[in-house]
Image (cartoon, rainbow, N blue to C red; front, side):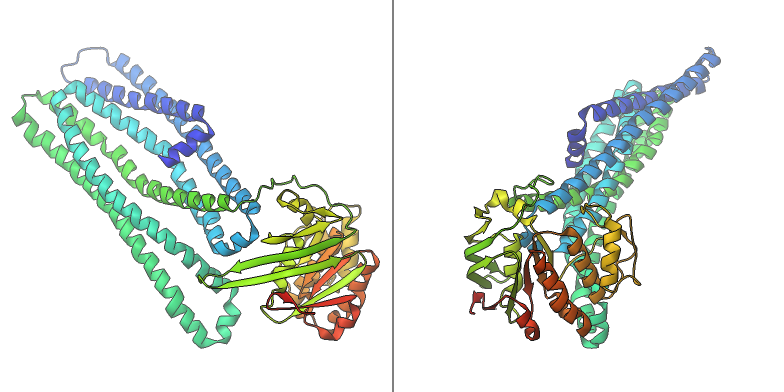
Length: 537
């Protein structure tokens, strides 16, 4: 019902028209069965050519009704899945970064890829389910015209079969839902295999432990729960098949003894019931897909509600353009990070900083001192628990945080490179990009044409230089670099600290650098040190 409501939400009219077409198609089937029975009756003395013309007309009407049901619903199904995926992506883009990090990228990937694909597959079989249901209904109505006793017996058997089917299916869906939960963890292991191959190959005990203690148990749990769920669905289908042959046996062996019915009526009822096997089989086969789609939709709804709980109030594309940055004043900034354990907490602050144009600030400290967290707070990616940030004297509230972030260009340690220069305007963009490619010694590694990068498949150091190129092209008032030089060779470290950073300073930029390179501290205007979340010097 949730899948049907998803279609109704997008277009009640389309669903209604498709349903009407399905009813017409099912009615045509019932009428065609009557025509066939009449034409095959030896006692019929009417004009066969008239029956043949009716047969052709009903067949064409059934063809058109089938198209009228399938095509609009297929179009609507694909559109609903498309909107669902975009809605989920918008929720993610509006989500608070800290909470998205806690959710884990693997859960988001699984929802966007696996779950939406399952829902698309489920929605795609709705037309076939609708047509099959209507055809079965038409057949039952026709049997009722032939013999009400046969119809009553059929309905009794079918009600019993449906009850058993629902019970078996409910158990199966529960197992499939459990398998989907295990699938989140398994998806994370797949990501580890793809992204951690070097680390696993270099340490064989780690590779064995990862395979035996992490990947294998979750993969086996996923296999077992999936087998249980699918076996439950097959059991439900087996119950339906058993009920079908029980009804067929009743029609052949018991109905003639129980009620006096003519041979022609009995033969017609049996013929119609045999004809029902195809749509019944269609329903059974598609129910697997439909059930898994229901599990995926429940998972996406759960994720959507979780995202909504921690969603910012920013609408995409509504942030004000950046202005100049005359000053950034941070006062009493406090932030609490809660880990996975109940008692695992990290406190950052209070932090007081005053940032001015044409100044280079280095932030240093040991691992775990809070440098990267402070960087995300400064640029507005994290929301502080208390304290204030003022840009040009204006305090940054929740409503202004999106506008505030537009003043920053940042290259974090876990940066991502897009293969296009997205959202960057300006004249001669390719020309300026090529100049920076040469300056950063990347001109022999890739090309930029019409804002598109020919490749991002580079070494870590080269990728960071490419990220720096994009940062230059953005040309924003404030720059933040998180351990940018950590993966550079000595030559580029020297260029970064002694040429590139002073160049940004000369342009009046505020430059913030998170670094351990004490050799170059003399190139900064100020150096602040963090220890255990506090500024100590």
